Image 1 (cartoon, rainbow, N blue to C red):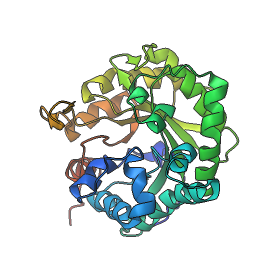
Image 2 (image 1 turned 30 degrees about the vertical axis):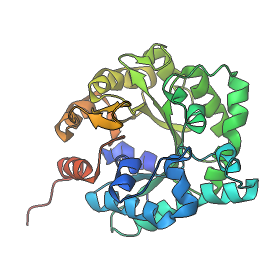
Image 3 (image 1 turned 180 degrees about the horizontal axis):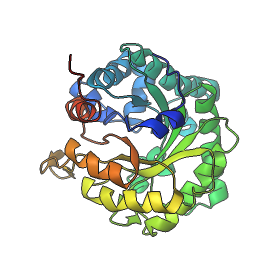
Length: 304
């Protein structure tokens, strides 16, 4: 259902549960994501698979769906022969598909339009390093058209996510300024630093004076990095904190598979909440089962 409250209003009242990793759910559904566009390929080739992936999460109890636009860019679609108008339509479709899935349940579901980093478009892993050799102004010019296209599709919020460094964070905030939509800003981190090596306290402070920013935090990181990040984000900005870490498993590039075990646990969320987290969920390899555990913990069944 379409939410009757703004996300910011909901965050002022209670913790809101995010979804998990869309890509791992799509793979579980049998989708082949071995493409430079990753899950964004399905926006054109098989959009109902995206609806099914989103639906799995709202039925698990997710209250926010993050769209399949993380790796969707005008440049990426152009490499597949899509013109500007078609690419803008595909970006807008990502929001509509999430809205369609939200209709499968009777609780409020907000749609967050994913805006991934510049490196995601390159599909070479540089999204986890940052420092692309581009200026803030150049990065702003890259991000602005897709932000405008996504905002025009009327999501509830823009998720400026998996940001590896402060230059890109500044560019994203500038590009989103005036788009008419609230945003959250979420860094990818290692320890107490961004992936590019900047102190997290300084990185979070960039968003402190932006009224448009309804939450700041981290995603696509180890769950062990979340505790300190929540404290730093809350103290640097005074804003609600968003956290959605990975499962904790590691990708083995030689064997082309995941190794290790999941360290994601819904029980950890209580500590994150005490430090200021209000948007909580999972990223890579966190699926509907884990989100269901989290939803039950945050919204336990009522006793008769």
